[in-house]
Length: 117
Length: 117
DNA sequence: TTCTAATACAACCATTTGGTTGTACGATAC
DNA sequence: GTATCGTACAACCAAATGGTTGTATTAGAA
Image (cartoon, rainbow over the protein chains, first blue to last red):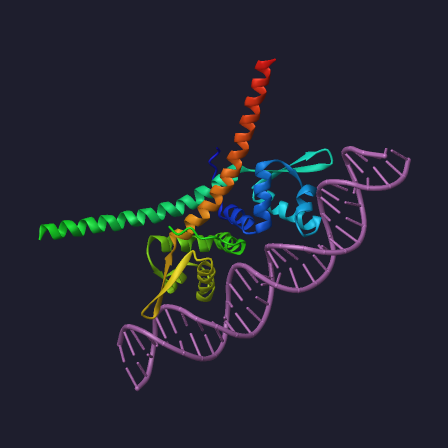
């Protein structure tokens, strides 16, 4: 997996793209198998153009790619980008755990002090 | 950790809240230690009210909690909510891996067929 | 008590978002 | 060739977002 630097704007687009139930569903479906835009559009209670826009948002966030296949455009989920989002959340976890670590250190230091007195 | 069911709307709010660099920074800082709203406001090139709104968005998504301390409101990051977001992304990973699994199965079946012939 | 710091909240504004309809065009089916 | 299927894209609209300023309230400091 390529470890590339994500700008704030990139990260914004990734999370923004995931902040919609229809788009999350599209990502799930296109991770399972390639699906054309029209096949996707058949599944949702909205216009073809609306689905097209959702796919465009996901494509812009690089959460999916689009590949021409005859007159169709096959949409494919991009697991690398999902993993990058996971790594971002991992960073928060790490920050939290380091806080716990410092609290543990503090507690240990206090215990030591108590033992010393 | 409490495993509670997240509605689509809940998930939308979590990812939406994370789709802003200022808010992500607030989450990071309040995971490290409690910080008052005015302390946060001092750090960013925007009005106090704007920072207040960002905190409100995070609070609505339950990514932070706010606790009164004298005349201040201490903001505290909520690691449980971060973990819930991680679990959501894990689901995508799982979907992807199950696809790989099926492809492996298919490949294995074809190999078997070749061996049989 | 009086002043001030920290917050809450409303009103307002520009931009973005998420949807619509309509038109155009290339690729396939007939 | 012609019809039609799948897509692209523009124009439009209502609602949400992300910022502002202004006013009110409350807790601590002087």
